[in-house]
Image (cartoon, rainbow, N blue to C red; front, top):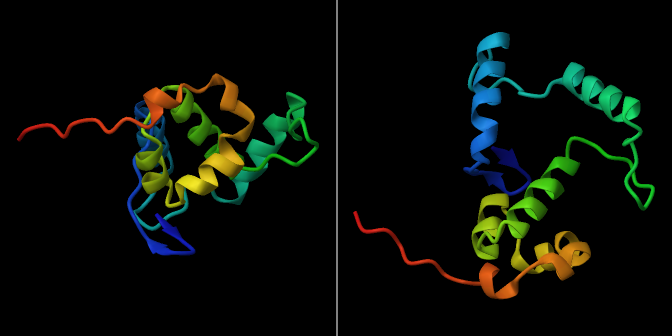
Length: 122
């Protein structure tokens, strides 16, 4: 992926792989093609509008970038290592704690999140 800090790798959720592969095949996407071009953003906005989800509970508009917030929160609630999430999302632990995890802090088990798992042997 390409972002404001250059090019980097990102790991996705396992459930997103098959839909992604179908989308690549269906639209004959190349390595540098956008997965969500303008028409997909419009479709995303239409779906949000029909479900009355265009704005979050604070009144902020939801965008495709909102999915990043959802991903981070879901991974935290699953007990993922916050350091690995920060590395994967190319952000800091402090940013995750301040902006992403603040409204789910009562749902998180800090003991489970901040555990370093042993590396697998090769």
